[in-house]
Image 1 (cartoon, rainbow, N blue to C red):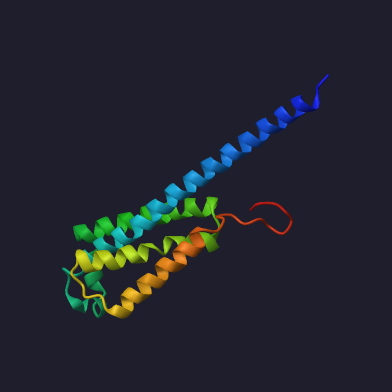
Image 2 (tube, rainbow, N blue to C red):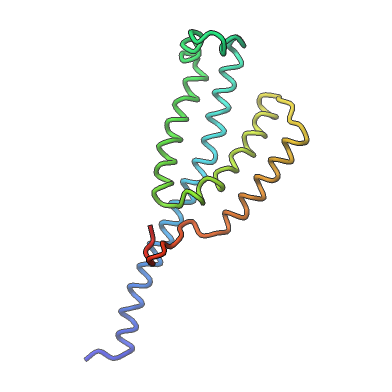
Length: 156
């Protein structure tokens, strides 16, 4: 015959397993968040770097887009964008959209830094203020749960 102590042990196993799965899911989500957040600015850096080598008449002459598509830096940027999209899709399978978008917006901070440091762009004070606001918003959202509970009590 099972005692209450034995039943508590059985319930504890299920709880431990559930907690381990939640921890694993949280770890996977954070790895994906870091990867997505870093990959987007880096891919944009390669695109911008490659596009700066092309004539500024690109917007007027669509045929120059074909030339851009074979520029090695642009090709690297495009491939990184494809990997970013696939990874972001994976991330959206383990976290809410309302969580993913604001948290990965911290990539905009990195984009501004890369633009300033690597591309030697002039970043105005108002842009830096915007970067600071994005950072603050990212901190608020990152401190919230990555998955919300549906009204019926089920997780999505």
